[in-house]
Length: 237
Image 1 (cartoon, rainbow, N blue to C red):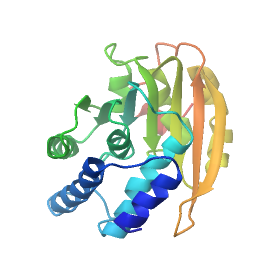
Image 2: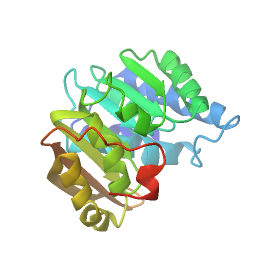
Image 3: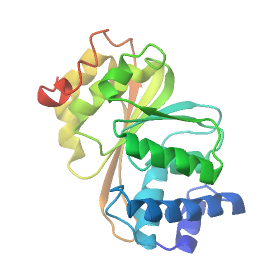
């Protein structure tokens, strides 16, 4: 997917990029490649793949969730900023908080935000389990999003505690996601969330399968969740 195809594909979905936004995506790609030589941010570095598998794929969440307005969103384990920073470029009013456990990646994101002149972004170096117990962030977000970080049973424990009551948790998944959703049923119930909508679609050009689960935060999450770092992974709910 070259830049022109990217712009056109988004326009077909109702997202029209202006010159500034197009330039921001171009600079994002350049920074990603520059920094990838010093540290491992992504295995995908050619422009057509970055535009398709990182930028377009990240923005696909907005095809199913309304991201207009000053929503507070949190991205758990964003790595090189996916999916929240491509979404932030498309919807500049979003207030974005990214939490990541690797300080080097936080350094990249801070540099990137400066290069792209992004405002209302915050990058937090923390384990997701500790972050979810921090009262400054716990149950403070309209929407929490994560893309391919962990299986849904584990991911739910890291993300649902951050969503405020009435807010949404959006899990972006590849193939075999339906099975993950079945496995996560108990965890979601314990954490106070339920399935609102689920969507399956294919990424253009390569036609790979994608799934997006939109989950409601129905009630407060019990204080004991998330458990200590490493525990959700070792013994999922």
